[in-house]
Image (cartoon, rainbow, N blue to C red; front, side, top):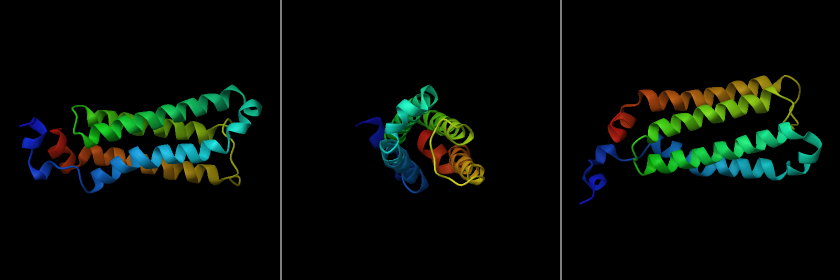
Length: 141
């Protein structure tokens, strides 16, 4: 019998934890592909700053996939990887919204609002991973 099969149903990945896994595994890569596909033509005009943002977003999506898979498979260190993914994604969003490197069509003043909502999103998921009893039960944290 595998050690993971001996775990109680209480330690199953479900609810908010499953939603986080789906967001990390599906939404983040999908969002990256949809937003980047239309902006790749700007690479020669925007220069190295834009290229840096693209590489950072690709790394953030890859880290998110690794975190989602680790969480679903209940691997040791999965929560730490997920927290690192959330922090790195938040840093990338700060770079996107606070620098002129990434092209956008938002009206002036909207970037601060969108950035605040993005940081709230990542902060709430980070707090969930830190304080949730379910996360503690599933991963022994």
